[in-house]
Image 1: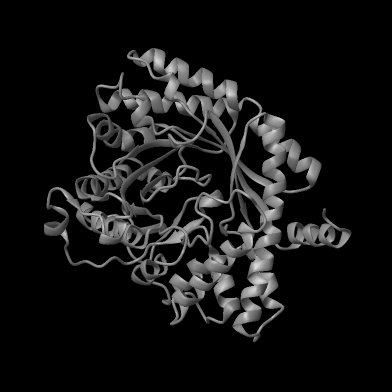
Image 2: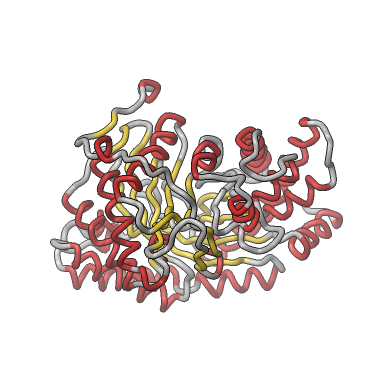
Length: 454
Protein backbone atom coordinates (compact mmCIF):
# COMPACT_ATOMS: atom_id res chain seq x y z
CA UNK A 1 0.00 0.00 0.00
CA UNK A 2 1.14 3.56 -0.71
CA UNK A 3 1.45 5.79 2.33
CA UNK A 4 0.62 9.52 2.24
CA UNK A 5 4.28 10.56 1.90
CA UNK A 6 4.65 8.40 -1.22
CA UNK A 7 1.51 9.99 -2.67
CA UNK A 8 2.95 13.48 -2.10
CA UNK A 9 6.29 12.36 -3.53
CA UNK A 10 4.64 10.97 -6.67
CA UNK A 11 2.65 14.17 -7.16
CA UNK A 12 5.86 16.18 -6.95
CA UNK A 13 7.55 13.91 -9.52
CA UNK A 14 4.66 14.46 -11.92
CA UNK A 15 4.23 18.21 -11.40
CA UNK A 16 7.85 19.34 -11.10
CA UNK A 17 10.12 16.62 -12.49
CA UNK A 18 8.49 15.53 -15.79
CA UNK A 19 7.43 12.05 -14.67
CA UNK A 20 5.01 10.50 -17.13
CA UNK A 21 3.82 7.23 -18.57
CA UNK A 22 5.32 7.57 -22.01
CA UNK A 23 3.05 5.07 -23.71
CA UNK A 24 0.32 2.50 -23.32
CA UNK A 25 0.86 0.15 -26.25
CA UNK A 26 -1.65 -2.53 -27.16
CA UNK A 27 -0.07 -5.46 -28.96
CA UNK A 28 -2.42 -7.22 -31.37
CA UNK A 29 -1.79 -10.43 -33.30
CA UNK A 30 -2.83 -10.19 -36.95
CA UNK A 31 -1.87 -13.75 -37.89
CA UNK A 32 -5.52 -14.75 -38.23
CA UNK A 33 -6.10 -11.86 -40.67
CA UNK A 34 -4.00 -13.41 -43.43
CA UNK A 35 -5.83 -14.35 -46.62
CA UNK A 36 -4.73 -15.20 -50.14
CA UNK A 37 -6.71 -12.17 -51.34
CA UNK A 38 -5.15 -8.74 -50.64
CA UNK A 39 -8.48 -6.95 -50.28
CA UNK A 40 -9.74 -9.54 -47.81
CA UNK A 41 -6.51 -9.31 -45.79
CA UNK A 42 -6.82 -5.53 -45.55
CA UNK A 43 -10.46 -5.81 -44.55
CA UNK A 44 -9.63 -8.37 -41.83
CA UNK A 45 -6.78 -6.21 -40.48
CA UNK A 46 -8.91 -3.08 -40.28
CA UNK A 47 -11.78 -4.89 -38.55
CA UNK A 48 -9.56 -6.58 -35.96
CA UNK A 49 -7.68 -3.40 -35.06
CA UNK A 50 -10.92 -1.49 -34.50
CA UNK A 51 -12.44 -4.37 -32.56
CA UNK A 52 -9.55 -4.73 -30.12
CA UNK A 53 -8.28 -1.13 -29.81
CA UNK A 54 -11.55 0.79 -30.12
CA UNK A 55 -11.41 1.90 -26.45
CA UNK A 56 -7.63 2.23 -26.10
CA UNK A 57 -7.31 6.02 -26.37
CA UNK A 58 -10.37 6.78 -24.23
CA UNK A 59 -9.20 4.32 -21.58
CA UNK A 60 -5.77 5.93 -21.46
CA UNK A 61 -7.32 9.39 -21.16
CA UNK A 62 -9.68 8.20 -18.42
CA UNK A 63 -6.85 6.64 -16.39
CA UNK A 64 -4.78 9.81 -16.74
CA UNK A 65 -7.71 11.84 -15.45
CA UNK A 66 -8.63 9.44 -12.62
CA UNK A 67 -5.08 9.00 -11.30
CA UNK A 68 -3.58 12.36 -12.25
CA UNK A 69 -0.74 10.64 -14.12
CA UNK A 70 0.16 12.01 -17.59
CA UNK A 71 -0.07 9.32 -20.28
CA UNK A 72 1.64 10.86 -23.28
CA UNK A 73 1.02 8.31 -26.04
CA UNK A 74 -1.42 5.54 -26.88
CA UNK A 75 -0.04 3.18 -29.50
CA UNK A 76 -0.54 -0.16 -31.20
CA UNK A 77 1.98 -2.82 -32.12
CA UNK A 78 1.12 -5.61 -34.52
CA UNK A 79 2.48 -8.88 -35.88
CA UNK A 80 5.34 -8.24 -38.34
CA UNK A 81 3.47 -7.50 -41.55
CA UNK A 82 5.84 -9.56 -43.72
CA UNK A 83 4.24 -12.62 -42.08
CA UNK A 84 0.66 -11.40 -42.44
CA UNK A 85 1.04 -10.38 -46.08
CA UNK A 86 3.04 -13.39 -47.26
CA UNK A 87 0.03 -15.16 -48.76
CA UNK A 88 -1.38 -12.22 -50.71
CA UNK A 89 1.40 -9.74 -51.51
CA UNK A 90 3.19 -10.25 -54.82
CA UNK A 91 4.79 -6.81 -55.21
CA UNK A 92 6.03 -4.02 -52.94
CA UNK A 93 2.95 -2.05 -54.01
CA UNK A 94 0.74 -4.73 -52.46
CA UNK A 95 2.43 -4.15 -49.12
CA UNK A 96 1.91 -0.41 -49.48
CA UNK A 97 -1.83 -1.09 -49.69
CA UNK A 98 -1.62 -2.85 -46.32
CA UNK A 99 0.33 0.14 -44.94
CA UNK A 100 -2.45 2.47 -46.08
CA UNK A 101 -5.02 0.24 -44.37
CA UNK A 102 -3.01 0.30 -41.15
CA UNK A 103 -2.73 4.08 -41.34
CA UNK A 104 -6.48 4.45 -41.85
CA UNK A 105 -7.12 2.28 -38.80
CA UNK A 106 -4.58 4.21 -36.70
CA UNK A 107 -6.24 7.49 -37.67
CA UNK A 108 -9.70 6.14 -36.89
CA UNK A 109 -8.48 4.93 -33.48
CA UNK A 110 -6.57 8.21 -32.94
CA UNK A 111 -3.40 6.43 -31.74
CA UNK A 112 -0.10 8.29 -32.06
CA UNK A 113 1.77 5.53 -33.88
CA UNK A 114 1.24 1.99 -35.08
CA UNK A 115 4.36 -0.19 -35.15
CA UNK A 116 4.93 -3.52 -36.82
CA UNK A 117 5.37 -2.71 -40.50
CA UNK A 118 8.28 -5.03 -39.99
CA UNK A 119 10.33 -8.02 -41.09
CA UNK A 120 12.49 -10.36 -39.01
CA UNK A 121 15.43 -11.39 -41.19
CA UNK A 122 18.07 -12.39 -38.66
CA UNK A 123 19.37 -15.29 -40.74
CA UNK A 124 17.87 -14.77 -44.18
CA UNK A 125 15.07 -13.14 -46.16
CA UNK A 126 12.03 -14.83 -47.60
CA UNK A 127 10.54 -13.37 -50.76
CA UNK A 128 7.81 -11.81 -48.63
CA UNK A 129 10.39 -10.22 -46.31
CA UNK A 130 12.24 -8.68 -49.23
CA UNK A 131 9.06 -7.34 -50.81
CA UNK A 132 8.06 -5.66 -47.56
CA UNK A 133 11.52 -4.18 -47.06
CA UNK A 134 11.54 -2.76 -50.59
CA UNK A 135 8.10 -1.22 -49.97
CA UNK A 136 9.23 0.72 -46.88
CA UNK A 137 10.23 4.03 -48.56
CA UNK A 138 6.87 4.39 -50.30
CA UNK A 139 4.89 3.10 -47.31
CA UNK A 140 6.43 5.66 -44.95
CA UNK A 141 6.02 8.43 -47.52
CA UNK A 142 2.27 7.92 -47.98
CA UNK A 143 1.33 7.27 -44.34
CA UNK A 144 1.40 9.44 -41.22
CA UNK A 145 1.34 7.09 -38.23
CA UNK A 146 3.06 3.91 -39.40
CA UNK A 147 6.43 2.88 -37.97
CA UNK A 148 8.67 0.30 -39.58
CA UNK A 149 11.44 -1.93 -38.24
CA UNK A 150 13.69 -4.65 -39.62
CA UNK A 151 15.64 -7.05 -37.41
CA UNK A 152 18.84 -7.99 -39.25
CA UNK A 153 20.59 -10.20 -36.70
CA UNK A 154 20.74 -11.87 -33.33
CA UNK A 155 23.25 -13.41 -30.99
CA UNK A 156 21.91 -16.86 -31.89
CA UNK A 157 21.95 -16.49 -35.68
CA UNK A 158 24.61 -13.91 -36.52
CA UNK A 159 24.09 -11.01 -38.92
CA UNK A 160 22.36 -11.21 -42.29
CA UNK A 161 24.71 -8.92 -44.21
CA UNK A 162 22.56 -9.09 -47.35
CA UNK A 163 19.76 -7.53 -45.27
CA UNK A 164 22.20 -5.00 -43.77
CA UNK A 165 23.32 -3.89 -47.21
CA UNK A 166 19.72 -3.66 -48.42
CA UNK A 167 18.71 -1.61 -45.37
CA UNK A 168 21.47 0.90 -46.14
CA UNK A 169 19.80 1.41 -49.51
CA UNK A 170 16.31 1.52 -47.98
CA UNK A 171 17.26 4.16 -45.42
CA UNK A 172 18.66 6.35 -48.20
CA UNK A 173 15.60 5.73 -50.40
CA UNK A 174 13.28 6.62 -47.50
CA UNK A 175 15.21 9.84 -46.93
CA UNK A 176 14.90 10.75 -50.61
CA UNK A 177 11.22 9.81 -50.79
CA UNK A 178 10.43 12.12 -47.84
CA UNK A 179 12.95 14.88 -48.56
CA UNK A 180 10.17 17.48 -48.74
CA UNK A 181 9.73 16.88 -44.96
CA UNK A 182 13.45 16.88 -44.09
CA UNK A 183 13.60 13.10 -44.65
CA UNK A 184 11.13 12.52 -41.81
CA UNK A 185 10.36 8.99 -42.99
CA UNK A 186 13.68 7.81 -41.55
CA UNK A 187 12.55 8.92 -38.08
CA UNK A 188 9.92 6.18 -38.29
CA UNK A 189 12.31 3.46 -39.46
CA UNK A 190 14.69 1.50 -37.24
CA UNK A 191 17.09 -1.37 -37.95
CA UNK A 192 17.57 -3.75 -35.01
CA UNK A 193 19.61 -6.64 -33.72
CA UNK A 194 18.11 -8.90 -31.02
CA UNK A 195 14.76 -7.12 -31.25
CA UNK A 196 12.44 -8.01 -28.31
CA UNK A 197 8.90 -9.24 -28.98
CA UNK A 198 7.32 -6.92 -26.41
CA UNK A 199 8.88 -3.48 -26.86
CA UNK A 200 6.22 -0.73 -26.42
CA UNK A 201 8.43 2.09 -27.78
CA UNK A 202 8.43 3.27 -31.38
CA UNK A 203 9.76 2.92 -33.98
CA UNK A 204 10.87 -0.61 -33.06
CA UNK A 205 7.65 -1.95 -31.56
CA UNK A 206 6.03 -5.05 -33.02
CA UNK A 207 3.86 -7.82 -31.57
CA UNK A 208 6.03 -10.93 -31.61
CA UNK A 209 4.73 -14.33 -32.62
CA UNK A 210 5.46 -15.57 -29.10
CA UNK A 211 2.78 -13.22 -27.72
CA UNK A 212 -0.93 -13.88 -27.20
CA UNK A 213 -3.81 -12.50 -29.25
CA UNK A 214 -3.72 -9.10 -27.53
CA UNK A 215 -1.71 -7.63 -24.66
CA UNK A 216 -1.01 -4.34 -22.86
CA UNK A 217 2.59 -3.16 -22.56
CA UNK A 218 3.46 0.12 -20.82
CA UNK A 219 6.55 2.28 -21.15
CA UNK A 220 7.25 4.58 -18.21
CA UNK A 221 9.87 7.31 -18.20
CA UNK A 222 11.32 9.78 -15.75
CA UNK A 223 14.76 11.20 -16.60
CA UNK A 224 13.82 14.43 -14.83
CA UNK A 225 13.01 12.54 -11.64
CA UNK A 226 16.40 10.80 -11.62
CA UNK A 227 18.20 14.07 -12.38
CA UNK A 228 16.45 15.84 -9.48
CA UNK A 229 17.32 13.02 -7.08
CA UNK A 230 21.00 13.09 -8.09
CA UNK A 231 21.19 16.85 -7.66
CA UNK A 232 20.41 16.33 -3.97
CA UNK A 233 23.50 14.11 -3.43
CA UNK A 234 26.25 15.90 -5.38
CA UNK A 235 29.71 14.67 -4.37
CA UNK A 236 28.39 11.53 -2.65
CA UNK A 237 30.09 8.15 -3.01
CA UNK A 238 29.32 5.67 -5.76
CA UNK A 239 27.42 3.56 -3.22
CA UNK A 240 25.07 6.44 -2.40
CA UNK A 241 24.81 7.34 -6.09
CA UNK A 242 23.77 3.80 -7.05
CA UNK A 243 21.29 3.46 -4.21
CA UNK A 244 19.67 6.78 -5.15
CA UNK A 245 19.21 5.79 -8.80
CA UNK A 246 17.91 2.35 -7.81
CA UNK A 247 15.33 3.69 -5.35
CA UNK A 248 14.19 6.36 -7.81
CA UNK A 249 13.76 3.78 -10.59
CA UNK A 250 11.67 1.69 -8.19
CA UNK A 251 9.30 4.61 -7.55
CA UNK A 252 9.02 5.41 -11.27
CA UNK A 253 8.25 1.80 -12.16
CA UNK A 254 5.58 1.55 -9.44
CA UNK A 255 3.66 4.28 -11.25
CA UNK A 256 3.89 2.35 -14.52
CA UNK A 257 2.79 -0.87 -12.83
CA UNK A 258 -0.30 0.86 -11.46
CA UNK A 259 -1.25 2.25 -14.87
CA UNK A 260 -0.54 -1.03 -16.69
CA UNK A 261 -2.69 -3.12 -14.38
CA UNK A 262 -5.54 -0.63 -14.52
CA UNK A 263 -5.40 -0.38 -18.32
CA UNK A 264 -5.38 -4.16 -18.65
CA UNK A 265 -8.37 -4.46 -16.30
CA UNK A 266 -10.45 -1.81 -18.04
CA UNK A 267 -9.68 -3.09 -21.52
CA UNK A 268 -10.07 -6.77 -20.64
CA UNK A 269 -6.66 -7.53 -22.12
CA UNK A 270 -3.79 -9.32 -20.30
CA UNK A 271 -1.00 -7.18 -18.82
CA UNK A 272 2.26 -7.89 -20.62
CA UNK A 273 5.31 -5.97 -19.42
CA UNK A 274 6.58 -2.69 -18.02
CA UNK A 275 9.40 -1.12 -20.00
CA UNK A 276 11.17 1.12 -17.50
CA UNK A 277 13.42 2.93 -19.97
CA UNK A 278 14.56 6.46 -19.24
CA UNK A 279 13.25 7.97 -22.49
CA UNK A 280 14.00 11.69 -22.81
CA UNK A 281 11.97 14.38 -24.55
CA UNK A 282 12.98 17.77 -25.97
CA UNK A 283 11.53 19.40 -22.83
CA UNK A 284 14.08 21.14 -20.61
CA UNK A 285 14.83 18.99 -17.56
CA UNK A 286 13.75 15.72 -19.20
CA UNK A 287 17.17 14.62 -20.41
CA UNK A 288 19.41 11.58 -19.98
CA UNK A 289 22.35 13.85 -20.86
CA UNK A 290 21.51 15.99 -17.82
CA UNK A 291 21.62 12.87 -15.63
CA UNK A 292 25.14 12.13 -16.91
CA UNK A 293 26.12 15.69 -16.03
CA UNK A 294 24.61 15.28 -12.56
CA UNK A 295 26.73 12.14 -12.14
CA UNK A 296 29.80 14.30 -12.73
CA UNK A 297 30.50 14.86 -16.42
CA UNK A 298 31.00 18.34 -17.86
CA UNK A 299 29.30 17.14 -21.06
CA UNK A 300 28.19 13.76 -22.41
CA UNK A 301 31.08 12.58 -24.53
CA UNK A 302 33.72 13.49 -21.96
CA UNK A 303 36.02 10.69 -20.73
CA UNK A 304 34.04 8.58 -18.30
CA UNK A 305 30.78 8.88 -20.25
CA UNK A 306 30.48 5.19 -21.09
CA UNK A 307 31.19 4.18 -17.49
CA UNK A 308 28.63 6.65 -16.15
CA UNK A 309 26.00 5.41 -18.61
CA UNK A 310 26.75 1.78 -17.70
CA UNK A 311 26.21 2.61 -14.03
CA UNK A 312 22.96 4.44 -14.77
CA UNK A 313 21.58 1.68 -16.99
CA UNK A 314 22.37 -1.07 -14.50
CA UNK A 315 20.91 0.71 -11.47
CA UNK A 316 17.72 1.61 -13.37
CA UNK A 317 17.20 -2.07 -14.19
CA UNK A 318 17.99 -3.21 -10.63
CA UNK A 319 15.53 -0.76 -9.13
CA UNK A 320 12.81 -1.33 -11.70
CA UNK A 321 12.70 -5.13 -11.54
CA UNK A 322 11.79 -4.95 -7.86
CA UNK A 323 8.73 -2.83 -8.62
CA UNK A 324 7.11 -5.09 -11.21
CA UNK A 325 6.76 -8.82 -11.75
CA UNK A 326 6.99 -8.35 -15.50
CA UNK A 327 9.79 -6.07 -16.69
CA UNK A 328 10.56 -6.40 -20.39
CA UNK A 329 10.91 -4.51 -23.63
CA UNK A 330 14.18 -2.59 -23.68
CA UNK A 331 14.36 -1.11 -20.14
CA UNK A 332 17.30 1.08 -19.20
CA UNK A 333 18.37 4.40 -20.74
CA UNK A 334 17.80 5.78 -24.23
CA UNK A 335 20.31 8.18 -25.77
CA UNK A 336 18.55 9.72 -28.79
CA UNK A 337 20.09 12.94 -30.04
CA UNK A 338 17.15 14.88 -31.46
CA UNK A 339 14.84 13.99 -28.54
CA UNK A 340 17.26 15.06 -25.79
CA UNK A 341 18.19 18.74 -25.49
CA UNK A 342 21.24 17.88 -23.40
CA UNK A 343 22.57 15.59 -26.13
CA UNK A 344 21.98 18.31 -28.73
CA UNK A 345 23.92 20.77 -26.58
CA UNK A 346 26.79 18.28 -26.25
CA UNK A 347 26.95 17.82 -30.04
CA UNK A 348 26.93 21.58 -30.60
CA UNK A 349 29.71 21.97 -28.00
CA UNK A 350 31.88 19.47 -29.88
CA UNK A 351 31.84 16.99 -26.99
CA UNK A 352 29.79 14.25 -28.62
CA UNK A 353 30.46 12.44 -31.91
CA UNK A 354 28.87 9.45 -33.62
CA UNK A 355 31.91 7.37 -32.66
CA UNK A 356 31.44 8.20 -28.96
CA UNK A 357 27.72 7.53 -29.22
CA UNK A 358 28.56 4.12 -30.68
CA UNK A 359 30.78 3.37 -27.67
CA UNK A 360 27.94 4.39 -25.36
CA UNK A 361 25.55 1.99 -27.09
CA UNK A 362 27.61 -0.93 -25.78
CA UNK A 363 26.08 -0.30 -22.35
CA UNK A 364 22.73 1.47 -22.96
CA UNK A 365 19.33 0.07 -23.87
CA UNK A 366 19.27 0.80 -27.55
CA UNK A 367 21.73 2.24 -30.04
CA UNK A 368 22.32 5.09 -32.46
CA UNK A 369 18.97 6.81 -32.20
CA UNK A 370 17.51 9.84 -33.99
CA UNK A 371 20.81 11.03 -35.43
CA UNK A 372 20.79 13.35 -38.43
CA UNK A 373 23.67 12.92 -40.88
CA UNK A 374 24.52 14.62 -44.20
CA UNK A 375 22.12 13.78 -47.02
CA UNK A 376 24.95 12.83 -49.37
CA UNK A 377 26.17 10.00 -47.11
CA UNK A 378 26.48 6.87 -49.32
CA UNK A 379 24.11 3.95 -48.74
CA UNK A 380 27.14 1.73 -48.16
CA UNK A 381 28.25 3.96 -45.29
CA UNK A 382 24.78 3.78 -43.75
CA UNK A 383 24.99 -0.01 -44.09
CA UNK A 384 28.39 0.01 -42.40
CA UNK A 385 26.99 1.99 -39.46
CA UNK A 386 24.13 -0.52 -39.19
CA UNK A 387 26.61 -3.42 -39.30
CA UNK A 388 28.75 -1.91 -36.53
CA UNK A 389 25.78 -1.38 -34.26
CA UNK A 390 24.28 -4.80 -34.97
CA UNK A 391 27.64 -6.42 -34.19
CA UNK A 392 27.68 -4.72 -30.79
CA UNK A 393 24.27 -6.21 -30.05
CA UNK A 394 25.15 -9.64 -31.39
CA UNK A 395 28.39 -10.02 -29.43
CA UNK A 396 27.04 -8.48 -26.21
CA UNK A 397 23.74 -10.38 -26.25
CA UNK A 398 21.70 -7.17 -26.11
CA UNK A 399 19.33 -5.18 -28.26
CA UNK A 400 20.91 -2.55 -30.45
CA UNK A 401 19.35 -0.37 -33.10
CA UNK A 402 20.03 2.29 -35.70
CA UNK A 403 17.57 5.09 -36.41
CA UNK A 404 19.65 7.39 -38.53
CA UNK A 405 18.41 10.15 -40.84
CA UNK A 406 20.40 11.17 -43.92
CA UNK A 407 18.71 14.53 -44.41
CA UNK A 408 18.65 15.27 -48.13
CA UNK A 409 20.05 18.72 -48.88
CA UNK A 410 21.57 19.20 -45.42
CA UNK A 411 25.22 19.10 -44.37
CA UNK A 412 27.27 19.17 -41.17
CA UNK A 413 26.39 22.21 -39.07
CA UNK A 414 22.80 22.49 -40.33
CA UNK A 415 19.88 21.89 -37.98
CA UNK A 416 16.78 19.85 -38.79
CA UNK A 417 13.40 20.42 -37.10
CA UNK A 418 11.21 17.31 -36.80
CA UNK A 419 8.69 18.67 -34.31
CA UNK A 420 6.84 17.17 -31.34
CA UNK A 421 8.53 14.37 -29.41
CA UNK A 422 10.95 13.87 -32.31
CA UNK A 423 12.52 17.25 -31.53
CA UNK A 424 15.30 18.81 -33.61
CA UNK A 425 18.82 17.70 -34.43
CA UNK A 426 22.17 19.09 -35.57
CA UNK A 427 23.54 17.27 -38.62
CA UNK A 428 26.51 15.25 -37.38
CA UNK A 429 29.69 14.39 -39.24
CA UNK A 430 30.19 10.85 -40.54
CA UNK A 431 33.52 9.15 -41.26
CA UNK A 432 34.04 9.68 -44.99
CA UNK A 433 36.24 6.63 -45.63
CA UNK A 434 34.51 3.88 -47.61
CA UNK A 435 33.36 0.46 -46.39
CA UNK A 436 31.73 -0.46 -49.72
CA UNK A 437 33.91 -3.51 -50.35
CA UNK A 438 33.10 -4.88 -46.89
CA UNK A 439 29.31 -4.47 -46.99
CA UNK A 440 29.34 -5.63 -50.62
CA UNK A 441 30.27 -9.17 -49.59
CA UNK A 442 27.40 -11.66 -49.81
CA UNK A 443 26.09 -13.87 -47.03
CA UNK A 444 26.11 -13.48 -43.27
CA UNK A 445 28.45 -12.99 -40.36
CA UNK A 446 28.31 -16.13 -38.18
CA UNK A 447 26.98 -16.11 -34.64
CA UNK A 448 29.64 -15.60 -31.94
CA UNK A 449 31.05 -18.65 -30.17
CA UNK A 450 29.25 -17.85 -26.91
CA UNK A 451 25.89 -18.14 -28.67
CA UNK A 452 26.08 -21.93 -28.43
CA UNK A 453 24.19 -22.58 -25.21
CA UNK A 454 22.65 -26.04 -25.79
